Amino acid sequence: MTEKPQKTKRPDARIKLLDSALRVIRMKGYTATTVDDLCREAGVTKGAFFHHFRSKDDLAVAAADYWSETTGALFEKAAYHDPEDPLDRVLGYLDFRKALVQGDVTEFTCLVGTMVQEVYDTNPSIRDACNRSITGHTATLVSDIAEAAEDRGVEIPGGAESLALHTQVVIQGAFVLAKAGNAPSIATDSIDHLKRYVELLFGRSRNGRAL
Image (cartoon, rainbow, N blue to C red; front, side, top):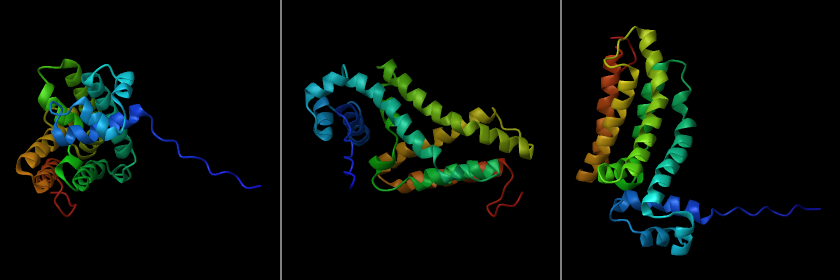
C-alpha cells in the first residue's frame, strides 16, 4: 500500500499579507504603501485584509512582530553562535550581517527601521512595535559582548548593552545611507568599520592576535 503524498499547506491570508508587508513597505515606504498594494502583492481581497486587520496601522504593528519572528529564527540558526570564544561570536555576527547585504537595497534593509523613520512621532503604537523589534534583537548580543569583555578584562564605556545598541545604530544608519546612495557597498563598508572598532576595543588585531 502506497502512502498518498501529503499536500503542502498553503499560507493563509494573514501570513500572505504579512509577507507582502515585508516586501512592499521596504520597497515603497510605509506611508506610500496602500491597503490595495498589500492585497495585490498578497493575492487576497480587501475583505480578507479587513477580516484579519482593522487598518493598515494594525497590520504594521503585526508586521513588526512578524519581522522579529522571521528574522529571529534566521539569526538563531546562524553559525556565528558556534565559536567557543565569545569575541569570535560577536565578530561572526558582524560578518553575518555583512553577508546578508545582497541584492537590491530593498532586499536587505530593515522593515522596522524603515517604518520607524516615518511614523516615530505620529503613530506611537507602530513606533513602539519597531522599538520592541530592534531592542529585542539587540538583547541577543549582550551576553556575548559581556562575556568577551570579562574574558579580556576590557571595560566597555556604557556597558555591554550600550555597545550592543551601538551595533544597531551603525547598521541601521548604514541602511539609510545605502538607500540614499543606492549603493549596498555603503552598508558593507560601514559594517567593516564597525568590526574594526570592536577589534580595537577588545585589543585584537586583524590577524586575530592581541594588540
